[in-house]
Length: 278
Image 1 (cartoon, one colour):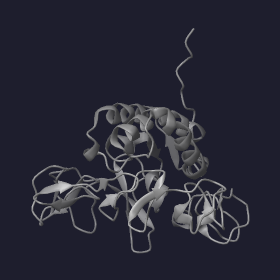
Image 2 (cartoon, helix red, strand yellow):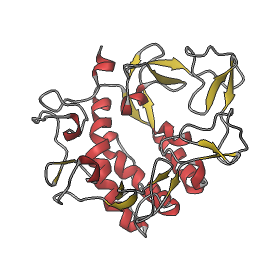
Image 3 (cartoon, helix red, strand yellow):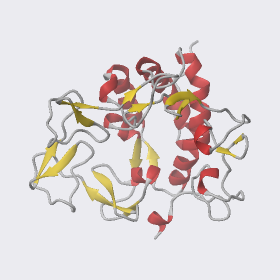
């Protein structure tokens, strides 16, 4: 008999739940420096389980975030057909719904994964301190106040009304606002281009996973235990002469980049950050 379908139970199952369809998307769109979906699997799970899962698990334990099974299915369907240039930010569009935030409008949120803690229909708006507040998303076509209201990831408050941002490939002028991360180039909105190993890279020409932009070209990242010069060349973890695995909560640390949680206060601290705890 065939195996029963895998049903994720929470943050501990997140990486395993999304790996099959994210790897298919990565290979189809050249987002990882591998030739096959099978080659993507172990690399994807190693990075996801070491870097992202601990942060989501901390927020789930704090009651701020819950895995949304309907959102995972919507993301799977979306990534199977979306044009590569329309999904540069991986957790955008339907894939933004894989996590269901628990913070109500007016409650606090933060940078990085803590921006996901706002309840559906709201969005984290950061201030200059990189701490934020959950604000209700004003629909496109409705009245808004610049600096106060948010029109969501695909909208912008323009002359007092929420307007849709121009999508990648749409005609634009320098005065138009393209999707976040994209720019108006030669009359159309364009996302950054993903280039291959050995090719030239810069802010608009990004390297695929398992490579890093070094000296202006995409070069392979260093695996755990390999010699390194800085944290940025390590595929996972941090650099102390060699690439070392991220430290768990409670372990002694000297800087945030050593911690799986991304928070160091002498020892690695669990999420959420002070932005949410204040």
